[in-house]
Image (cartoon, rainbow, N blue to C red; front, top):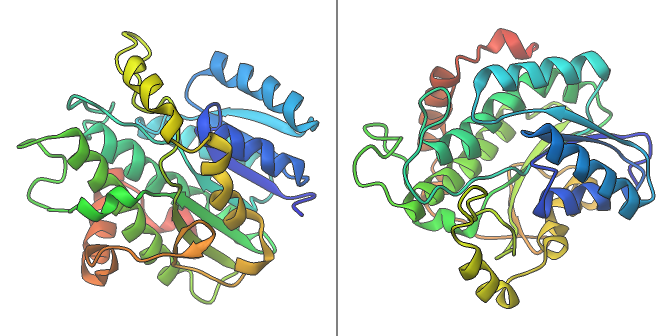
Length: 288
């Protein structure tokens, strides 16, 4: 049970993030819903209250494609809460065309990895104050075709939607493994997961509606958001994984990841590059 525990979930206004928010609230957690859009966030918050029977929800604005917004989000959380028990890095984007974030990063690497890299490190001091802090990051089995090349990390040459997405999901695992290594000897763990093929609106363009017909056609073959959120909820709440860190999970079990995802040197390179890109410094996450 998570009574009196505080959980922050990115992308909590829709899909798996929303399902996880409801499930964790039912366990007694206070949920901070980190969302990019205030109107959609408030609507999702009210729905979550209804479905969970809990009033313990709050909204914080966070655009993971904007470094300044991430700093503002972390500051707001630290101001409102003495500690943070769980950070669920759930938000994700799929860009059919190559687009860039506010700071000039390729959108999928920028939001799915770099945004969460910065947010996690900024919130580490709050997680350190928890009895047992947890960082849970949603990756994907798509990481198996991912690669990370320092000479073209933002795919300025040869961009494809699947390569961009896979690269960002590989980065999620490498980040988790390096973070877990850095957190050894502390009370904070870091794990990641493959949720399965989940029916969400992640590939639907809200403006044009592009992708809706394909999404509708394939929906019967996908997991529901609740099914997809199950392993994330498990990693965020179960006592069974309280002492486990640095693992990649699928269906509540440790799963195999690609050789690249297990490459410690690549994880070191990704960490250093991510630090350089986001401008995060060790001093911002004391005691590191």
